[in-house]
Amino acid sequence: MIDPQLIEKYQKILSQDPQSKLFAPLADALRESGDLPQAERVALEGLRRHPEYVGGVVILGRILIDKKEFTQALPHLEKALQLSSENILAYQLMAEVQLQLKKPAQALKAHKMVLFFNPLNEKSQRAVEKLEKLTAIDYDEDVFEFKHKPAVGNQKGGASLERNLALIDALILRNDLDRSKELLAEVQKDFPQDKKVNERLKLLEMSHEEAVPLEPLPPKRKVILQNQIRALENVLKALDDRISLESELQP
Image (cartoon, rainbow, N blue to C red; front, side, top):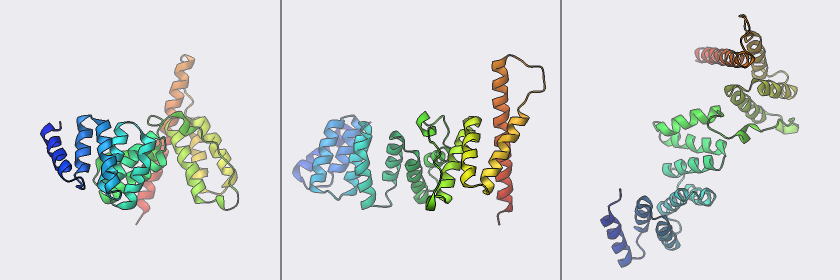
């Protein structure tokens, strides 16, 4: 909880010296106290005098985030990073905004920049792990509405393939095996010899085969659930084994 006397102290100094950069900590203190409208006014007035002061720009972005005005916060955070490319707080706030705007790829990039400057940041470590997997638990359905478009010309490269594989792996993780297999078949048309694509196809085919129950059939709904669980377990186990093997082979 912010001490009201601290806010009064900042206000007194700023009234005596309107050019002081103490407008930034004052705006932040007002933000923490819950007075977001006044915090925004102080930040805007201070930035009118010091438009390139990165501390003030970041605080304004933070105030707008607290107001849930994420689209408005974005350009201020972009400006802060232009002024100071090593500002960890700006990257953290950028990641938060991008998630709120349903842009997980940009959020992932921001969290990776946080880890570049601070590899021990646990929040960004967890976020990167989740974002790279693109689990359905963390994102809305529209993330998975992506439709494969045949690659042509110079688009038929690694970036296009990796984007498709990332979506396929996300579908597998959410146990949407039919859609993942369908998308894999489409991607294989563009990359018929790609080892990663063909490996995933084999794994999915194997998972469907091994998912057939051998015991007497229980009720239909239970059969479907059991098959889905077994299929996902088979796919994830095979992928884990593959990752472990590749790690052991690396020098």
